[in-house]
Length: 413
Image (cartoon, rainbow, N blue to C red; front, side, top):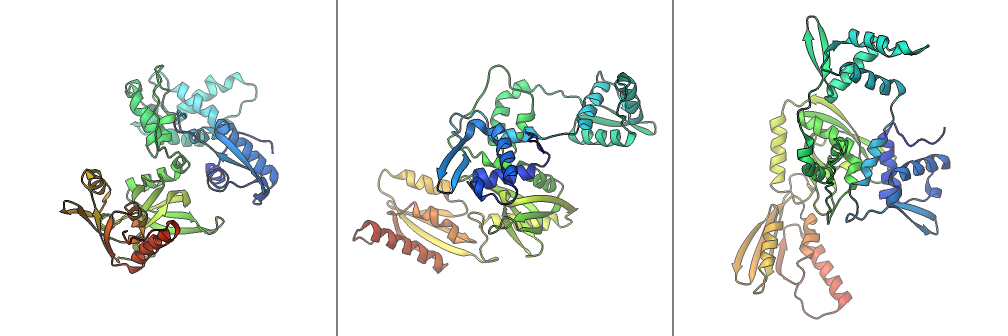
């Protein structure tokens, strides 16, 4: 089969880009899922979208290609280009223009009138035209109505279709759209809206997490299920083996996005495990909406209760809480330390003990998630206690290891 830039199945491209260009950095010789020719076709397809953002390095195993983006110079997330490469059948493209042209000028037509109009106005110009039956046209009209391109209303016993009226002047929203496109988790939608005006508006981000673009389809399916209060069947890739897919029946509740690494998580209630849990969006393979959840308030109550005592995206042992206390030393002129504690405390509390000491306390489901944050106060910690002794031991063991590595006789942590 000849190489084509267009794709029908975006999930395959999403997986390929993630495995080879984002996380895997695999070489051609390591690709054994399909033939070497398949590897070359996929590589050329992706490079046709991301040619200016591709880099490579040569190792003993071979040439590894990866994505390299400088957020200071990139005007728009380059991964959005993959969404513009969707392929369509000849019939779908043809019907799209026929239907929109027939309904131009404010016309409202029934399905049969549209079928007759296509035959008389367009197909009559060809010697051996491919006719469209009523069923095919009706499906396309339903699809375009769901997309918001068309409106439908009753006229007697039949439905008639007309073009949707767009009364919004997007030029007045150019700056907001430009920011939305790069900042919102579903910013790819902004790239399909009308082009920006001549006075081009670009934003630059110090920390720009572009990889979320690959999860846009999954996020959209989850948000649709959440908006309709539906449960969902979620297929998740195994962390240890990408070829293994686990299917979970869950009730999706909230989307969490890390400000540290940009990674997205789904907070859901797992029906089989009977407890809330987090799922990484980039590990979700597909989302299939289910029935409307009749106990919506009950499960959302679990969500709100969990948020009161969750530090990151781990619930630890089911319904088990860890208590942590830490006293920080603050010198004169270091009020920025206190302000930082207030800003980053999340579900914790900050209490001023005296001029030079501040106490931080928190009750969380998994204190182990706090360790990286606690380490940033090394040299200022006067006292630290945690009800989870394994967490406490790890913190002190790390400090002893650092002391042994760098030397020093003081016992100050």
